[in-house]
Length: 125
Length: 328
Image (cartoon, rainbow over all chains, first blue to last red):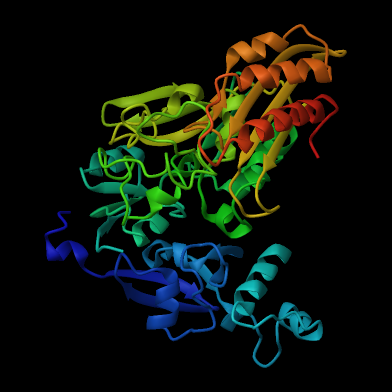
Protein backbone atom coordinates (compact mmCIF):
# COMPACT_ATOMS: atom_id res chain seq x y z
CA UNK A 1 0.00 0.00 0.00
CA UNK A 2 3.01 2.30 0.02
CA UNK A 3 2.54 5.43 -2.02
CA UNK A 4 6.01 4.97 -3.47
CA UNK A 5 4.94 1.70 -5.01
CA UNK A 6 3.62 2.48 -8.50
CA UNK A 7 1.51 -0.67 -8.39
CA UNK A 8 -0.49 0.94 -5.62
CA UNK A 9 -1.68 3.58 -8.04
CA UNK A 10 -2.98 1.13 -10.60
CA UNK A 11 -6.33 1.80 -12.17
CA UNK A 12 -9.28 0.04 -10.62
CA UNK A 13 -12.11 -1.52 -12.52
CA UNK A 14 -15.63 -0.48 -11.55
CA UNK A 15 -19.06 -1.46 -12.81
CA UNK A 16 -21.98 0.91 -12.69
CA UNK A 17 -25.19 1.80 -14.46
CA UNK A 18 -24.98 5.14 -16.21
CA UNK A 19 -28.12 6.61 -17.72
CA UNK A 20 -29.64 3.17 -17.89
CA UNK A 21 -26.64 1.49 -19.52
CA UNK A 22 -24.37 -0.94 -17.65
CA UNK A 23 -20.77 0.28 -17.90
CA UNK A 24 -17.44 -1.28 -17.01
CA UNK A 25 -14.82 1.40 -16.46
CA UNK A 26 -11.19 1.70 -15.41
CA UNK A 27 -10.57 4.64 -13.10
CA UNK A 28 -7.71 6.05 -11.11
CA UNK A 29 -8.49 6.40 -7.41
CA UNK A 30 -8.27 10.19 -7.44
CA UNK A 31 -10.58 10.75 -10.43
CA UNK A 32 -13.78 12.45 -9.36
CA UNK A 33 -17.09 11.38 -10.79
CA UNK A 34 -17.32 14.79 -12.44
CA UNK A 35 -14.00 14.36 -14.25
CA UNK A 36 -14.91 10.81 -15.23
CA UNK A 37 -18.15 12.04 -16.82
CA UNK A 38 -16.67 15.02 -18.58
CA UNK A 39 -13.13 13.95 -19.46
CA UNK A 40 -13.39 10.20 -19.99
CA UNK A 41 -16.98 9.70 -21.08
CA UNK A 42 -17.58 12.99 -22.88
CA UNK A 43 -20.79 13.57 -20.97
CA UNK A 44 -20.27 17.31 -20.68
CA UNK A 45 -23.82 18.20 -19.70
CA UNK A 46 -22.75 17.95 -16.07
CA UNK A 47 -20.88 21.18 -15.43
CA UNK A 48 -17.81 22.04 -13.40
CA UNK A 49 -18.49 25.24 -11.51
CA UNK A 50 -16.68 25.71 -8.22
CA UNK A 51 -15.37 22.11 -8.02
CA UNK A 52 -15.78 22.34 -4.22
CA UNK A 53 -19.37 21.25 -3.60
CA UNK A 54 -20.67 24.76 -3.22
CA UNK A 55 -22.41 25.75 -6.44
CA UNK A 56 -24.31 22.58 -7.40
CA UNK A 57 -23.59 22.85 -11.14
CA UNK A 58 -22.25 19.27 -11.07
CA UNK A 59 -25.37 17.78 -9.47
CA UNK A 60 -26.21 14.28 -10.70
CA UNK A 61 -28.45 11.54 -9.32
CA UNK A 62 -26.94 8.53 -7.57
CA UNK A 63 -29.50 5.85 -6.80
CA UNK A 64 -32.15 8.52 -7.33
CA UNK A 65 -30.64 11.02 -4.90
CA UNK A 66 -28.94 14.25 -5.83
CA UNK A 67 -25.23 14.51 -5.10
CA UNK A 68 -22.29 16.73 -6.04
CA UNK A 69 -20.22 14.85 -8.65
CA UNK A 70 -17.20 17.04 -7.91
CA UNK A 71 -16.90 15.74 -4.32
CA UNK A 72 -17.51 12.12 -5.26
CA UNK A 73 -14.71 9.76 -6.22
CA UNK A 74 -15.55 7.73 -9.32
CA UNK A 75 -14.04 4.66 -7.69
CA UNK A 76 -16.62 4.93 -4.90
CA UNK A 77 -19.45 4.68 -7.44
CA UNK A 78 -18.81 0.98 -8.07
CA UNK A 79 -22.25 -0.64 -8.20
CA UNK A 80 -24.12 2.66 -8.28
CA UNK A 81 -26.94 3.71 -10.56
CA UNK A 82 -26.15 7.15 -11.94
CA UNK A 83 -28.28 9.54 -13.93
CA UNK A 84 -26.90 12.71 -15.49
CA UNK A 85 -28.75 15.41 -17.40
CA UNK A 86 -28.12 13.37 -20.57
CA UNK A 87 -30.09 10.47 -19.10
CA UNK A 88 -33.27 12.27 -18.11
CA UNK A 89 -34.99 12.44 -21.49
CA UNK A 90 -36.66 9.39 -22.98
CA UNK A 91 -35.40 9.54 -26.55
CA UNK A 92 -36.72 12.79 -27.98
CA UNK A 93 -39.25 13.17 -25.17
CA UNK A 94 -37.85 15.49 -22.56
CA UNK A 95 -38.23 14.72 -18.87
CA UNK A 96 -41.18 16.62 -17.35
CA UNK A 97 -38.73 18.70 -15.29
CA UNK A 98 -36.86 19.71 -18.46
CA UNK A 99 -40.17 20.65 -20.10
CA UNK A 100 -41.14 22.65 -17.01
CA UNK A 101 -37.84 24.55 -17.06
CA UNK A 102 -38.42 25.47 -20.72
CA UNK A 103 -42.09 26.32 -20.23
CA UNK A 104 -41.38 28.64 -17.31
CA UNK A 105 -38.12 30.07 -18.70
CA UNK A 106 -36.28 28.94 -15.57
CA UNK A 107 -32.80 29.74 -16.88
CA UNK A 108 -30.23 32.26 -15.89
CA UNK A 109 -27.14 32.02 -18.10
CA UNK A 110 -27.88 28.31 -18.46
CA UNK A 111 -24.49 27.02 -17.35
CA UNK A 112 -25.74 25.44 -14.16
CA UNK A 113 -29.18 24.53 -15.53
CA UNK A 114 -28.30 20.80 -15.86
CA UNK A 115 -27.37 20.77 -12.18
CA UNK A 116 -30.52 22.67 -11.27
CA UNK A 117 -32.68 20.24 -13.23
CA UNK A 118 -31.02 17.19 -11.67
CA UNK A 119 -31.40 18.79 -8.25
CA UNK A 120 -35.09 19.48 -8.93
CA UNK A 121 -35.60 15.88 -10.09
CA UNK A 122 -33.88 14.71 -6.91
CA UNK A 123 -36.24 16.86 -4.88
CA UNK A 124 -39.27 15.45 -6.69
CA UNK A 125 -38.00 11.88 -6.25
CA UNK B 1 -5.30 16.34 -5.49
CA UNK B 2 -2.25 14.16 -4.87
CA UNK B 3 -2.22 10.55 -6.11
CA UNK B 4 -3.20 7.96 -3.55
CA UNK B 5 -3.94 4.28 -3.32
CA UNK B 6 -7.33 2.92 -2.37
CA UNK B 7 -8.88 0.04 -0.54
CA UNK B 8 -12.38 -0.92 0.48
CA UNK B 9 -12.57 -3.18 3.53
CA UNK B 10 -15.68 -5.24 4.27
CA UNK B 11 -15.68 -5.03 8.06
CA UNK B 12 -14.58 -2.69 10.82
CA UNK B 13 -11.65 -4.71 12.11
CA UNK B 14 -10.26 -4.99 8.59
CA UNK B 15 -10.68 -1.23 8.22
CA UNK B 16 -8.83 -0.29 11.41
CA UNK B 17 -6.07 -2.76 10.61
CA UNK B 18 -5.47 -1.07 7.25
CA UNK B 19 -4.70 2.28 8.87
CA UNK B 20 -1.17 3.53 8.34
CA UNK B 21 0.49 6.85 9.12
CA UNK B 22 -0.59 8.56 5.89
CA UNK B 23 -3.98 6.97 5.38
CA UNK B 24 -7.45 8.35 5.93
CA UNK B 25 -10.91 6.88 6.12
CA UNK B 26 -13.40 8.19 3.58
CA UNK B 27 -17.20 7.95 3.65
CA UNK B 28 -19.18 10.89 2.23
CA UNK B 29 -15.95 12.65 1.32
CA UNK B 30 -17.64 16.06 1.32
CA UNK B 31 -15.02 17.66 3.55
CA UNK B 32 -12.03 15.40 2.97
CA UNK B 33 -12.06 15.63 -0.84
CA UNK B 34 -12.47 19.39 -0.61
CA UNK B 35 -9.42 19.54 1.67
CA UNK B 36 -7.51 17.26 -0.70
CA UNK B 37 -8.30 19.50 -3.65
CA UNK B 38 -6.90 22.43 -1.68
CA UNK B 39 -3.80 20.38 -0.78
CA UNK B 40 -4.63 20.81 2.91
CA UNK B 41 -5.08 17.05 3.28
CA UNK B 42 -2.59 14.85 1.41
CA UNK B 43 -3.31 11.24 2.28
CA UNK B 44 -1.32 8.56 0.50
CA UNK B 45 -4.00 5.97 1.00
CA UNK B 46 -7.78 6.18 1.29
CA UNK B 47 -9.76 3.52 3.11
CA UNK B 48 -13.29 3.57 1.72
CA UNK B 49 -15.55 2.61 4.62
CA UNK B 50 -18.83 2.80 2.72
CA UNK B 51 -18.95 -0.99 2.50
CA UNK B 52 -19.04 -1.41 6.29
CA UNK B 53 -22.29 -2.47 7.97
CA UNK B 54 -22.82 0.84 9.81
CA UNK B 55 -25.92 2.13 8.03
CA UNK B 56 -28.70 1.35 10.48
CA UNK B 57 -30.71 3.42 12.93
CA UNK B 58 -32.06 1.18 15.67
CA UNK B 59 -33.66 1.55 19.08
CA UNK B 60 -31.54 0.62 22.08
CA UNK B 61 -32.64 -1.42 25.09
CA UNK B 62 -32.56 1.74 27.22
CA UNK B 63 -35.03 3.53 24.95
CA UNK B 64 -32.51 5.54 22.99
CA UNK B 65 -31.28 5.32 19.42
CA UNK B 66 -28.12 3.87 17.94
CA UNK B 67 -27.23 5.66 14.73
CA UNK B 68 -24.72 3.93 12.47
CA UNK B 69 -21.79 6.12 11.49
CA UNK B 70 -22.59 5.72 7.79
CA UNK B 71 -26.19 6.92 7.99
CA UNK B 72 -26.30 9.94 5.69
CA UNK B 73 -27.14 13.34 7.12
CA UNK B 74 -30.32 13.35 5.01
CA UNK B 75 -31.43 9.89 6.15
CA UNK B 76 -30.74 10.86 9.75
CA UNK B 77 -32.69 14.12 9.59
CA UNK B 78 -35.71 12.50 7.93
CA UNK B 79 -35.70 9.28 9.93
CA UNK B 80 -39.18 8.93 11.54
CA UNK B 81 -37.74 8.11 14.99
CA UNK B 82 -35.36 11.07 14.85
CA UNK B 83 -38.00 13.46 13.57
CA UNK B 84 -40.53 12.41 16.19
CA UNK B 85 -38.27 11.95 19.22
CA UNK B 86 -35.29 14.21 18.57
CA UNK B 87 -36.65 17.08 16.47
CA UNK B 88 -33.75 19.20 17.73
CA UNK B 89 -31.34 16.90 15.87
CA UNK B 90 -33.40 16.90 12.66
CA UNK B 91 -33.58 20.70 12.73
CA UNK B 92 -29.85 21.06 13.28
CA UNK B 93 -28.92 18.65 10.49
CA UNK B 94 -31.28 20.34 8.04
CA UNK B 95 -29.84 23.75 8.95
CA UNK B 96 -26.48 22.67 7.54
CA UNK B 97 -25.03 22.31 4.04
CA UNK B 98 -27.19 21.66 0.96
CA UNK B 99 -29.50 18.77 0.02
CA UNK B 100 -26.77 17.34 -2.23
CA UNK B 101 -24.18 17.41 0.54
CA UNK B 102 -26.60 16.02 3.11
CA UNK B 103 -27.26 13.06 0.79
CA UNK B 104 -23.53 12.34 0.74
CA UNK B 105 -22.21 13.32 4.18
CA UNK B 106 -22.18 10.67 6.90
CA UNK B 107 -23.09 10.94 10.57
CA UNK B 108 -19.59 9.98 11.70
CA UNK B 109 -17.94 12.29 9.20
CA UNK B 110 -20.01 15.23 10.38
CA UNK B 111 -18.17 15.04 13.71
CA UNK B 112 -14.82 15.13 11.92
CA UNK B 113 -15.36 18.22 9.81
CA UNK B 114 -12.42 20.59 9.92
CA UNK B 115 -12.84 24.25 10.66
CA UNK B 116 -13.78 26.67 7.89
CA UNK B 117 -11.29 29.28 9.16
CA UNK B 118 -10.08 31.08 6.00
CA UNK B 119 -6.47 30.84 7.11
CA UNK B 120 -6.68 27.09 7.68
CA UNK B 121 -7.91 26.74 4.10
CA UNK B 122 -5.21 29.00 2.62
CA UNK B 123 -1.98 27.03 2.32
CA UNK B 124 -0.01 30.19 1.45
CA UNK B 125 -0.30 31.51 5.01
CA UNK B 126 0.71 30.07 8.40
CA UNK B 127 -1.81 28.17 10.50
CA UNK B 128 -1.14 26.27 13.71
CA UNK B 129 -3.92 23.83 12.95
CA UNK B 130 -2.50 23.01 9.52
CA UNK B 131 1.22 23.41 10.27
CA UNK B 132 1.77 23.19 14.03
CA UNK B 133 4.00 25.96 15.32
CA UNK B 134 3.70 28.16 12.20
CA UNK B 135 1.49 30.83 13.79
CA UNK B 136 -2.07 32.09 13.69
CA UNK B 137 -2.88 34.96 11.32
CA UNK B 138 -6.55 34.84 12.31
CA UNK B 139 -5.91 36.19 15.80
CA UNK B 140 -5.04 39.63 14.43
CA UNK B 141 -6.52 39.23 10.98
CA UNK B 142 -9.98 38.81 9.50
CA UNK B 143 -11.63 37.15 12.46
CA UNK B 144 -15.30 37.95 12.09
CA UNK B 145 -16.28 34.26 12.05
CA UNK B 146 -13.92 33.15 14.81
CA UNK B 147 -14.24 32.00 18.41
CA UNK B 148 -15.34 34.05 21.40
CA UNK B 149 -15.12 31.20 23.91
CA UNK B 150 -12.42 28.66 24.73
CA UNK B 151 -9.87 29.92 22.21
CA UNK B 152 -6.11 29.90 22.82
CA UNK B 153 -3.21 32.06 21.72
CA UNK B 154 -2.50 29.28 19.19
CA UNK B 155 -5.92 29.03 17.54
CA UNK B 156 -9.21 30.92 17.38
CA UNK B 157 -10.99 28.61 14.93
CA UNK B 158 -14.56 27.40 15.40
CA UNK B 159 -16.11 24.00 14.79
CA UNK B 160 -18.44 24.26 11.79
CA UNK B 161 -21.02 21.55 12.48
CA UNK B 162 -24.68 22.18 13.24
CA UNK B 163 -25.42 18.51 13.94
CA UNK B 164 -22.78 18.41 16.66
CA UNK B 165 -24.39 21.29 18.56
CA UNK B 166 -27.60 19.27 18.85
CA UNK B 167 -25.66 16.10 19.73
CA UNK B 168 -23.87 17.99 22.52
CA UNK B 169 -27.20 19.21 23.91
CA UNK B 170 -28.68 15.70 23.69
CA UNK B 171 -25.64 14.16 25.46
CA UNK B 172 -24.92 11.71 22.68
CA UNK B 173 -22.26 9.06 23.13
CA UNK B 174 -19.70 8.37 20.41
CA UNK B 175 -18.89 4.69 19.79
CA UNK B 176 -15.46 4.09 18.32
CA UNK B 177 -13.37 1.08 17.40
CA UNK B 178 -9.63 0.83 16.94
CA UNK B 179 -6.98 -1.87 16.86
CA UNK B 180 -7.06 -1.99 20.67
CA UNK B 181 -10.81 -2.60 20.69
CA UNK B 182 -13.99 -0.64 21.23
CA UNK B 183 -14.68 2.29 23.54
CA UNK B 184 -17.25 5.03 24.02
CA UNK B 185 -16.64 8.77 24.38
CA UNK B 186 -19.12 11.19 25.94
CA UNK B 187 -19.97 13.84 23.36
CA UNK B 188 -18.76 16.65 25.59
CA UNK B 189 -15.32 15.02 25.66
CA UNK B 190 -15.10 14.10 22.00
CA UNK B 191 -13.98 17.43 20.56
CA UNK B 192 -11.05 19.33 22.05
CA UNK B 193 -10.39 22.95 22.78
CA UNK B 194 -7.35 24.15 20.83
CA UNK B 195 -5.03 24.87 23.81
CA UNK B 196 -1.46 24.31 22.57
CA UNK B 197 -2.32 21.57 20.08
CA UNK B 198 -4.92 22.98 17.67
CA UNK B 199 -3.93 20.40 15.05
CA UNK B 200 -5.94 17.92 17.09
CA UNK B 201 -9.67 18.52 16.72
CA UNK B 202 -10.82 15.56 18.81
CA UNK B 203 -9.84 12.65 21.04
CA UNK B 204 -9.80 9.93 18.37
CA UNK B 205 -6.62 7.91 18.08
CA UNK B 206 -5.22 7.59 14.55
CA UNK B 207 -6.46 4.04 14.12
CA UNK B 208 -9.90 4.64 15.60
CA UNK B 209 -13.06 4.74 13.54
CA UNK B 210 -16.40 6.15 14.66
CA UNK B 211 -18.89 3.30 14.35
CA UNK B 212 -22.06 4.79 15.85
CA UNK B 213 -23.62 7.70 17.71
CA UNK B 214 -25.89 6.74 20.57
CA UNK B 215 -28.68 8.98 21.79
CA UNK B 216 -30.10 8.52 25.29
CA UNK B 217 -33.87 8.14 25.59
CA UNK B 218 -35.73 11.21 24.40
CA UNK B 219 -36.80 13.69 27.06
CA UNK B 220 -36.94 16.96 25.20
CA UNK B 221 -39.13 16.20 22.20
CA UNK B 222 -41.85 18.67 23.17
CA UNK B 223 -39.64 21.60 24.01
CA UNK B 224 -36.58 22.03 21.87
CA UNK B 225 -35.35 24.46 19.28
CA UNK B 226 -32.30 24.85 17.06
CA UNK B 227 -31.69 28.45 16.09
CA UNK B 228 -29.02 29.21 13.53
CA UNK B 229 -27.91 32.75 12.75
CA UNK B 230 -25.91 33.19 9.55
CA UNK B 231 -25.12 35.74 6.88
CA UNK B 232 -27.81 34.36 4.56
CA UNK B 233 -30.77 32.14 5.18
CA UNK B 234 -29.43 29.06 3.40
CA UNK B 235 -26.17 27.26 2.82
CA UNK B 236 -23.91 29.22 5.15
CA UNK B 237 -22.09 28.27 8.31
CA UNK B 238 -23.39 29.56 11.62
CA UNK B 239 -22.12 32.83 13.02
CA UNK B 240 -23.91 31.73 16.15
CA UNK B 241 -26.25 28.81 16.70
CA UNK B 242 -28.13 27.60 19.74
CA UNK B 243 -29.52 24.19 20.61
CA UNK B 244 -32.02 24.66 23.41
CA UNK B 245 -34.02 21.87 25.04
CA UNK B 246 -36.32 22.03 28.03
CA UNK B 247 -38.15 19.53 30.17
CA UNK B 248 -41.03 21.38 31.79
CA UNK B 249 -43.37 20.70 34.67
CA UNK B 250 -46.06 23.27 34.08
CA UNK B 251 -43.95 26.36 33.60
CA UNK B 252 -41.16 25.16 35.87
CA UNK B 253 -37.92 24.02 34.25
CA UNK B 254 -37.20 20.46 35.39
CA UNK B 255 -34.22 20.03 33.12
CA UNK B 256 -32.53 22.05 30.41
CA UNK B 257 -29.81 21.68 27.82
CA UNK B 258 -28.11 24.55 26.12
CA UNK B 259 -25.32 24.30 23.55
CA UNK B 260 -23.81 26.92 21.27
CA UNK B 261 -22.31 26.56 17.80
CA UNK B 262 -20.12 28.96 15.85
CA UNK B 263 -18.51 30.38 18.97
CA UNK B 264 -15.79 27.90 19.93
CA UNK B 265 -13.47 25.10 18.79
CA UNK B 266 -16.19 22.65 19.87
CA UNK B 267 -19.90 22.79 20.60
CA UNK B 268 -20.06 24.94 23.73
CA UNK B 269 -21.94 23.70 26.73
CA UNK B 270 -21.82 24.91 30.34
CA UNK B 271 -23.55 22.68 32.89
CA UNK B 272 -23.34 25.35 35.59
CA UNK B 273 -25.54 27.60 33.45
CA UNK B 274 -28.06 24.80 32.95
CA UNK B 275 -28.04 24.29 36.72
CA UNK B 276 -28.96 27.96 37.15
CA UNK B 277 -32.17 27.41 35.22
CA UNK B 278 -33.30 24.20 36.91
CA UNK B 279 -36.28 24.66 39.19
CA UNK B 280 -36.91 28.16 37.86
CA UNK B 281 -40.01 29.22 35.97
CA UNK B 282 -39.94 29.90 32.27
CA UNK B 283 -39.39 33.64 31.99
CA UNK B 284 -37.49 36.05 29.81
CA UNK B 285 -35.67 37.30 32.88
CA UNK B 286 -34.35 33.83 33.71
CA UNK B 287 -33.34 33.19 30.11
CA UNK B 288 -31.46 36.50 29.96
CA UNK B 289 -29.64 35.60 33.18
CA UNK B 290 -28.67 32.24 31.68
CA UNK B 291 -27.46 33.89 28.49
CA UNK B 292 -25.35 36.36 30.45
CA UNK B 293 -23.84 33.53 32.49
CA UNK B 294 -23.13 31.51 29.35
CA UNK B 295 -21.19 34.42 27.86
CA UNK B 296 -19.52 35.72 31.01
CA UNK B 297 -16.08 34.57 29.88
CA UNK B 298 -16.51 35.48 26.22
CA UNK B 299 -13.43 37.18 24.72
CA UNK B 300 -13.97 39.10 21.51
CA UNK B 301 -11.38 39.52 18.77
CA UNK B 302 -11.16 42.68 16.69
CA UNK B 303 -13.99 41.82 14.29
CA UNK B 304 -16.28 39.43 16.16
CA UNK B 305 -17.47 41.32 19.25
CA UNK B 306 -20.92 41.32 17.63
CA UNK B 307 -21.11 37.60 18.30
CA UNK B 308 -21.40 38.16 22.04
CA UNK B 309 -24.48 40.34 21.67
CA UNK B 310 -25.85 38.06 18.97
CA UNK B 311 -25.31 34.91 21.05
CA UNK B 312 -26.99 36.52 24.06
CA UNK B 313 -30.09 37.34 22.05
CA UNK B 314 -30.05 34.00 20.23
CA UNK B 315 -29.92 32.07 23.53
CA UNK B 316 -32.93 33.98 24.90
CA UNK B 317 -34.86 33.46 21.68
CA UNK B 318 -34.01 29.75 21.36
CA UNK B 319 -35.01 29.05 24.97
CA UNK B 320 -38.21 31.06 24.55
CA UNK B 321 -39.09 29.22 21.34
CA UNK B 322 -38.28 25.88 22.95
CA UNK B 323 -40.57 26.71 25.89
CA UNK B 324 -43.57 27.21 23.63
CA UNK B 325 -42.95 24.14 21.51
CA UNK B 326 -40.31 25.40 19.20
CA UNK B 327 -40.12 22.60 16.69
CA UNK B 328 -41.12 24.68 13.71
